Amino acid sequence: MAYYKKIDKSVFNYGIAIPKEYVESFLLDEIIEQGTSREIIVNFKKENYSARIIHLKNQSGKPNFQIRWDNNIELLRELKKEFIQTYFAIESQNYDSKIKGEYYRTNLLGGNQEVLIVKAINSKLIELETFIKIETPYDNIFRDLVEKNVFGWLSKIDKNLMITKSTPWLEIKDLIKHENTEYVVYYLLDDVNKELYIGSAKKLGDRVKIGRNEIPNWNKFRYEIIHPKYHSELREIEYHSIMNFARIMKNNGNLRNSPISDYVLVNKDYKFYQK
Image (cartoon, rainbow, N blue to C red):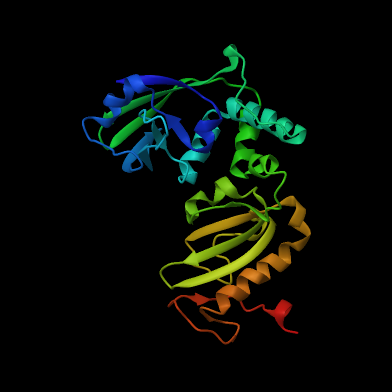
């Protein structure tokens, strides 16, 4: 059995509640004691993501079940990109509320609400399917802002976040999708020759190239986006990362280390710390 969920801020932050009339359809005779959870897989757009069904404790003793994916950054990002119109509207209203010192509740007009279908396939698998999606002329640029986590640091105006986004390891073939990302500290990995290179760039594609001289056979990469407040410190943040890895890895900079890995840090430039 499936139910239709109007998109609200909970979808982008932690997950969704299971309406009481649908609880049996999602538990499928597998009991979840109050205060415990069950690991599940959520399938969205043909990709699988880890999640949980939890049975929350509450004073009333009434059943309160939720599907939670708050620890799955990849799924949260894909939901934001899929329902970008709603996400943008919610973040805009939330930003205004924070400035006014008010608590924000999702408040969207009926004609502007996007909808998700939530379906239990079996006790271990739940499927999410787009039912209503509102397209706008600005979707592509908004999705790019989601990738850069711009909304993330805008909504945290009371925090001084240095890193606004940290990616998992990505395959070299995905580089073209990330070349325009700005103000990053990046990591290049050669998992055959067991080498690592760390650098920084005002624009990722300007510095990260296939066959990079320092690590010509790199095949994976990841990066961290620096908050605009700290753009002037980009080089210092890069060297901080280099030095921390150099202290725990064999390295080409001849720095004393206590290696806990058989990888080699191929960076040779440590002059920032040579004082």
